[in-house]
Image 1 (spheres, rainbow, N blue to C red):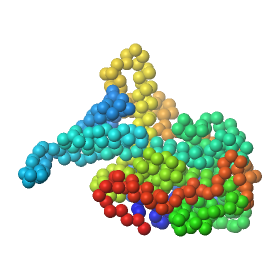
Image 2: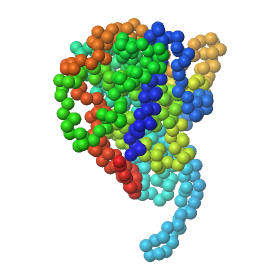
Image 3: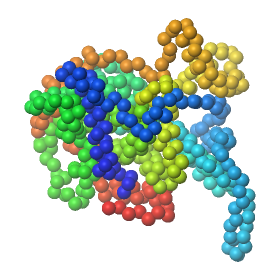
Image 4: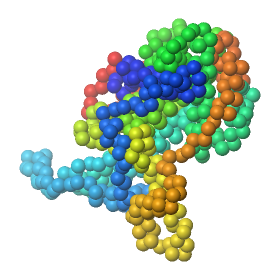
Length: 482
């Protein structure tokens, strides 16, 4: 079943992990710092040149509707559908009595409608409500709703926090909660959605510390000449995303191996490997968006499908199935290319400076709110609409003014302060705890892991669930599984 990660997908994922790990190694280990010019700092793809140019974003204004109401969501989609290319056509159908009936319809060239998953679900609900209308325009068939990547990355963080973060684990050295308390990172919430930036900064620093701790364990017993070779050893030894061996197994055929003794499991070691593996998956997904690599993003969605399914993120796991089925079987080649390559916005005309479309929309909304706050009592529907349509020019004027006044321009990216001091503290905790040394019988008090996150998946149950969801989306398909 092509919805699941294949062996080539896993090999490509490991290669991406090795590139990301090698970047961390040359940054923190002095003996490898001279190899930075040999490290691949940007993973190239077929459209790297085109997607590194600045995006031309045209704001369409503001619609005074509430998308939480179904009828107003239909009005929103009607307003957006005016941008869908359509062509009048005549449709002939044969009635049960044998007569031919001809009526006027429209042939629409559907375009993508992107947003967070809640918006996608509301758009699909509006289309379902209109599904019995007479023509394609009234049925809202000109819009194809799909989830964007920034909110998806937020849900991935939530799944990781659900598995690895517990407020009761303050005494368990090496856990996310204990490290947060040790560093006084009060901005890191128990729900990453409350402070996405603080959560990602914290996870990135902890991930760097885990990579270097794993590297020092390997270097203590072997001499490795290059950072690339060291990165490969870290992936082979400590990354737990290994779908060809112990993950996604059919439990009905391996009943003798399921009863693993808890005394033989090193829960501390397993926690560190899980944090490293899931952290690298998050880091790779984030990097693919920054590079504007649609092929990598869709490949990572196969792994996200597994993470969302096992962590009970039901709506996102269903959306992953729908996205992959559309990419593989439903969309035309042109729509498939749009799905893969129109997901990003580049605001700086530089390589590796792309952001997800929904994140750029958040930036636009923030700028509009700033403009509206300065209007005072002059806020009306017409002034709000004018401000929304002119926000692109407002950004341009502000940029030119700041340049001519020799002021530092407002960057489209968040700044990343140096975390070397916190990094050294976390690294010492991991080394003192020896989290990457196998010591059977160890366990954290609050987070007791008997197996990895993906090891919880039952392949037979997963296949049945995939077949059920596939039949809902493609009711006439013949599904075969190996």
